[in-house]
Length: 366
Image (cartoon, rainbow, N blue to C red):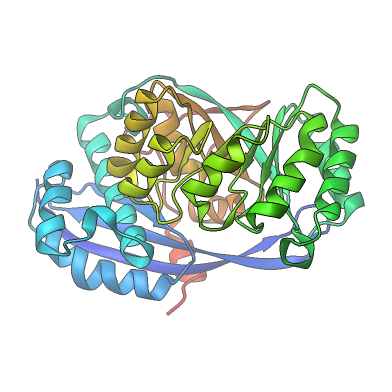
């Protein structure tokens, strides 16, 4: 089997903000790797710097892998580090997202060729995984936040993530402290509340906010400080009883290694859209396991991220984002959704996803 061509499509998908119903949009990239045996692998990418990422995929990565055996994933990874860029394994930004999207498509091809779902090829630890619902968008009012939280719990979910407002550029912690206290009061003590700081706080204000939140039994606080700085994260971790989580800001192996070995996290995060795909994510998962750390995903896009959590022994849970999931609902036909706190992984070959080809034209950014 040989790769014959690579495509990358930039899309902008209209979405609705939960509860308020306000119109918005989110970008997503769809990568297709075609083979001479009629098998096509599908990867996806983020909306950040979409056009630059597309150009790198079509102009550099595509020609590099065309004519090669798509099953030689590790060999392609190794060779590209020499032939494309010396920083391939420590890639960041556009390079990391391009590599990741193509890698996802190669694993999809491998699964389809072997008639196995990707999560089984990655280890096959579980066919059904815990899922947390990212619902607490910063644009929601306090009343909308509570209303949506109660709705999520009523649907049977027992893990939810709140996204920080970080008022006054993170200098005013009172807003997030108030909103999280109201949230805990609304959902009760048995629901796990996770917090995503999105790197919006400096060390001092992150420390003060964590102290305010300790009575609320927070499940973990993700990305509390800028750049997910390993030194600051490790120091912050020593000052709080709330578990901390993060993935490297760059996504590359070495920065993830520094978070793990530096004692910066209680829960290791990954996202296969910018961590080098499944090839890179698997390496990070195994590193985390050696340090007795569970692995969860952050950064949305559950359809692809869930496979690595179902694959590895230390897989903890995956994220389902009420915003970005609307993009994958548009791009794929009848994609799976979590039911009562769990996501059943698809048993079909590869990623088990069927592409909505009309969406590639309908939402295209040229």
